[in-house]
Length: 140
Ligand SMILES: [Zn+2]
Image (cartoon, rainbow, N blue to C red):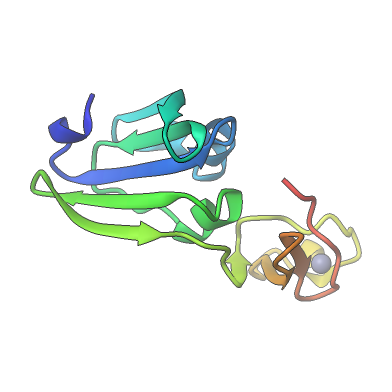
């Protein structure tokens, strides 16, 4: 599968080498209803080595999750075999239902219907905290 062969889909490029699998897991791509390819340790002029994920199909992916795992990643949206959009990710300000709060007394742990919401509290450290109880999320 090459980019050229994708008619409608997404190519996540410039993922830091080693982060591709983590991103694959967090995006839930194992259960995706589309062919997904991960390429690891691809030679990159910019990064030395990088990972790439190609999704051959028009399925929803969370840009917040991609930005969280690797803010330096680039997302290429392919439509009708052409590059329709190129997005630079960056760190998302909020993460909704991506991480679970590990504080057992947190209201989000007790109330199942509540969204799990984390806010970026320190961009330099890539630190996120639960908006309900301020428990820190584990750093990737
Ligand atoms: Zn919490």
